[in-house]
Amino acid sequence: MPCKRHVFNRFSNKDQPVSDNGEKAYYTLELVKNEVVRPGRLFSLGQCVEIVKNLSVNTSQAGIHEIAGIILKDISLTTRVLQVANSIEYNRSGKRIVTVSQAIMVLGMAPIRSIAYSILLLEQHSNHLQADHIRNACLLSVMGGLLARQIGEKAGLEDPEQGFITAAFTHFGRILIATFLPDEEKEIVRLVKEEGQTEEEASRGVLGLRMEQFGKQIGEFLNLPGTVTSYMDPFNVSDRDLPSINRKILQVTLLSLRACRAVQMAKSAGEIEEALRSLSSNKELAVRGGLDLAHGFKSVVQEICKFYAVRPSGDFWSKAMLLCEPDKKPLAVQVTSPMLSHSPDLHVFQDGVLTVTDLLDRDDINLADIVSSIAETLYLGFKARNVVVAVRDEERGGAVVGLAAYGLHSTSLREEFVVPPDADASQLTAMALQNGKDIYIENAHESHIRVHLPPWLLSTEPASFLLLPILQGEKVAGLFYIDGPMIGEGGRIPPEIQRELKIIRKEMVLSLRLSGKLSL
Image 1 (spheres, rainbow, N blue to C red):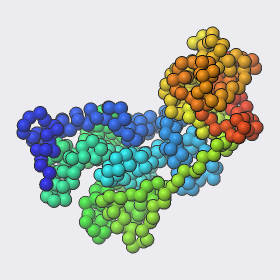
Image 2 (tube, rainbow, N blue to C red):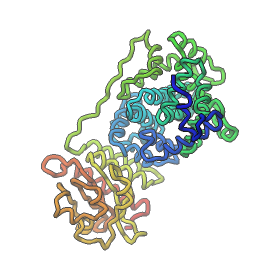
Image 3 (cartoon, helix red, strand yellow):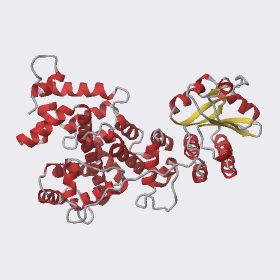
Image 4 (cartoon, helix red, strand yellow):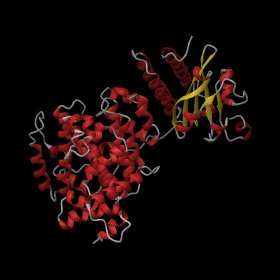
């Protein structure tokens, strides 16, 4: 049996363990706050937080590039998001989706956010330490979100995906505890299983506060939007949050959390079905055709198995699977990424052109979204390492500066990519602009090439790269930089890709003119 003094020693410099709940809560929160701000400590959960922070309930306020940029930081995440987005369950248009920007335009931002959240937790974050308690917490979060989406659809929520996010984040505290306080998490489990305490009693005794309360306070510390944090402790909505609460979203979130707890605490399939049957008769939530939460959990299990490249395990998954025993137990399908060819992807370029055309047809031209879509098209189409779209900036004396970037060094390149009008003509970036010619360097490691690279570009250690100037007549409008492109055989861009690039450059010039960035 774990020693309580050992469990609590980290919270105090005293010889005696901390016993007061308020004091325990303070030290618990301070310890985890110090952990989550350390670079890299949140792992993929940090990307989940970033996605939610950049996409509020009012999706019209968020640009395509904001969420696409987060997903595109990780090429494996990008590939998996596109695989799920192309499934018939999500993409009813029948049109193949090849870029994240296109997926957002076809499906909407909220579904893409939920897909990315699920992939990050189930396939990346929960596998970081291969720890069962972390996987279990992540699985609980995603399954709670998927169940809430189903309930929200039946309850007529205007945006069922909001139900997904609010319900998923009620388990945020559980994931943090499993990640940063594994000893305390094990003690809570022991108190529930061996001493018959409720999870709330055990959590208060060990941490000084309930898990949902803990998750909400850390969520607020991380500046998650109020549209999420207001629902993170649905059992105890604060007076501060009450005026902004949507009662229907709150009821959906609460019902999902109660259903997950019922499954978690039950000891047999009969207990699970009885608890879910009782919850299904919820009188506070008007639901079309009635609720069947047991059937809802079965659908969630099937969805996890179908879409996500994981083999779930753990106590919660085992209990959820008990509901599926009368049917055949579904088998998890291992989804694999398609093999990469060494040639650029024509479909990506063609669909990228159409996406930008759609954006240009809108009444309100959003240059950031257009440039982001073009950058993504080049990044995925060339299977590149880094991509920068740079444009002429009259406010900076006509210098060509980075406007959008994706890839391994996207942050530094976006900030440092500057080609001043008086740049050294021997630098390849300046040479491409002054001569108006495309430049392809097959081996950038050769010494006679390296001397012609600006220091900020050299620091990213490119192996090969493309420089594609954007011109309006003879006037410089910008520059595409593609690091590590898949060119194809012979080191030449295939003619069909060149045709699409010609259109993309024209679209780039048109977008700059329509947005007032480029004069005739």
